[in-house]
Length: 187
Image (cartoon, rainbow, N blue to C red; front, top):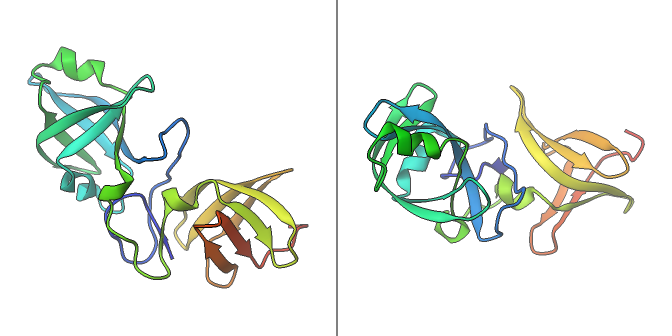
């Protein structure tokens, strides 16, 4: 039903996604957490369904201070639950260290279409949430995974944690930016 902002996935996805200060045309896919070694490699914490999902994209857009810059990926591989990668123009540890904390994004247009009835998390963030009675519950602020299902963090007059499951989701209308749920306003 929900899909992370990454490669196609089957079923539920496992990493939270945030749109904070991100251009609408990009989807954040991960973050650079540290330099790796002395030859300019970087350690990346992906926000994709599969760890290697980010390696599908040959150009990553990086932003540390809000300005997006393209960086060509020369090589990369899985390293535990993270990735290590080498970017064009990043030749030593000092340059790699300057990239620490940078967000990694790809253009939304490069993501494959989600299968019918499934959604990228990034497409759900920001949707207005109503219940069946038409009561405004707030907006989807973030999504996270639990062992059983994904959970919507809906912020309005108060914060609500709502399971993103078929028994609760009545309708998802991405075009209208509206999510209708079978959820009592008092919960």
